[in-house]
Image (cartoon, rainbow, N blue to C red; front, side, top):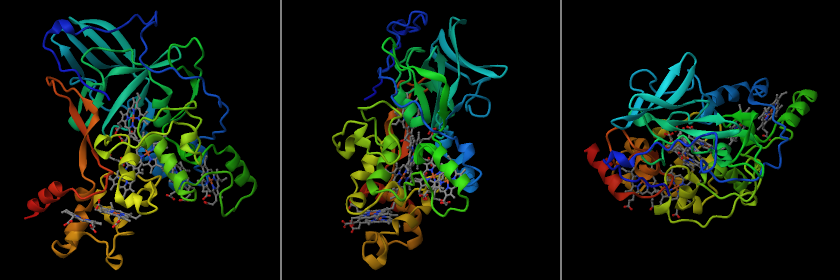
Length: 405
Ligand code: HEC
Ligand code: HEC
Ligand code: HEC
Ligand code: HEC
Ligand code: HEC
Ligand code: HEC
Ligand code: HEC
């Protein structure tokens, strides 16, 4: 996948790869896709769900799904714009994250002279691990060269970039399909990369991304108040196992190559009507980032039960940092009555087993896909994520047991 070239101290190798944005030839690195066939979507917007589903709406506002893309502004952007706001590519070349009144920019300086400045328009990522920002140029979207990396609280080179200043990486519709609810694609035969409408888009992974467009649902329930069951709306908990998994897998199932335009998949649809069937990789080759489905599907728990993501997760809550409480979910299947509890039950206290259930059987791993180059370092630093391959990790268990003693 994405690899990093080692940083060569020879400064001569480092170039400013700013192509003239007026001649867009060779500027694009993204794939080109045909325009979206289904532009007419009947989205109501999450703020129209609040009247009848207030509690869920309020939970949703705190969720990472809601926060995963937003207009870039003082409230949504993390990172220092005042002093620790620069990344030095070498001793005379840097990019700075800057604030001018209420607008935010990344500016490249060579020998102290500003060379190119582009705005933060949309921020991608809640900031749990990091934030990458993107900007509009005509109807194209481009990635900014610096990413805010939460683990070390600093600006770094965006993941997957080599050590050069690059404002030209175009954003594909697939990136937005995973990080937003909807973008109208306006790509045509002359487009150099995916093009989008600047007005017709919905940021955040919102209600209707998981439940389907809701205008018809709302109209029905306004006319027929007091109904007990929802009309014309998809509930993942009531769909089949495949339907439920396919929805989450759209974004948590790895890169996937599409066979139909982005944003055509709707909740309830069959994923492989829209993407090419991928061949299952061995677990050792699946990155912990972006493919929870792939890892989970390799686990015995998943293979030998009707498990879905909803066996452990809720569609709306922000559950972060509650790993110690997840043992309750394990116990829905692993309980002494069914004789399939942990092998250590007779040797370690119940309390200890419960609080470390996840640490021993779903430990954190370093991602090889989300890696950033930090200031003054040549070896990229990884973000750490929880493994969804549920298994016995002997070494990690022994480590956790030895700390206890
Ligand atoms: C005018 C009131 C009203 C509005 C507005 C409304 N809903 Fe509903 N919704 C209902 C009623 C009534 C039900 C059935 C009872 C229940 O499950 O709460 C329901 C049920 C649901 C269900 C569960 C369906 C099932 O089969 O279990 C989902 C999902 C849902 N709504 C999503 C949404 C979304 C998303 C929006 C905004 C786009 C929305 N609703 C806006 C009234 C409304
Ligand atoms: C990431 C996907 C996702 C998003 C975003 C999402 N939901 Fe859900 N929703 C689910 C899942 C999964 C279930 C079924 C599991 C459950 O009950 O928690 C569900 C269940 C529901 C239900 C029926 C069950 C209940 O608890 O009443 C309603 C109503 C609902 N969602 C409304 C909404 C509304 C309104 C929003 C936006 C404010 C929203 N959802 C956002 C995934 C999502
Ligand atoms: C449209 C794409 C999309 C869909 C569909 C989707 N997710 Fe996500 N999910 C994301 C993205 C993007 C993030 C990362 C948000 C961030 O932190 O910026 C995320 C984050 C999460 C998290 C982590 C939250 C945390 O506590 O850190 C969980 C858990 C999760 N999703 C579960 C689900 C489940 C379960 C489903 C299916 C019901 C689902 N998602 C459907 C895109 C999606
Ligand atoms: C196949 C779906 C998918 C695609 C395509 C995708 N992402 Fe993500 N991204 C995710 C999911 C899911 C997460 C969170 C969970 C994880 O890392 O596994 C995430 C996490 C992130 C995060 C960290 C958020 C945080 O604070 O934790 C950033 C930043 C990010 N993505 C940016 C991008 C950008 C920019 C693109 C396109 C150039 C992109 N992603 C393409 C699904 C996707
Ligand atoms: C939906 C039911 C279900 C849930 C929830 C569940 N498991 Fe399992 N798990 C199973 C089944 C079924 C097996 C296979 C048992 C067998 O074949 O002997 C299994 C096997 C395992 C194994 C043995 C794996 C191996 O490779 O030998 C471990 C460890 C395990 N589960 C831990 C957990 C943990 C920890 C959780 C909670 C995070 C959990 N399970 C949640 C159903 C479940
Ligand atoms: C057996 C239980 C279990 C199942 C099933 C499960 N998860 Fe998780 N997941 C967890 C636990 C525990 C965490 C850690 C909670 C935390 O600290 O945020 C987690 C965290 C996550 C995160 C955040 C990862 C991180 O390190 O930031 C994502 C994204 C996620 N799950 C997605 C999914 C998706 C998608 C599915 C279905 C393919 C799924 N999970 C199925 C238990 C489960
Ligand atoms: C200190 C680490 C640790 C903790 C905490 C822990 N386990 Fe285990 N677990 C292990 C090890 C190691 C094994 C394998 C032991 C062996 O094969 O001798 C195991 C085995 C298992 C098995 C497989 C049993 C079989 O039939 O092969 C299951 C299921 C399981 N654990 C579930 C759980 C659940 C559920 C929890 C939380 C309530 C938990 N474990 C907590 C380390 C741990």
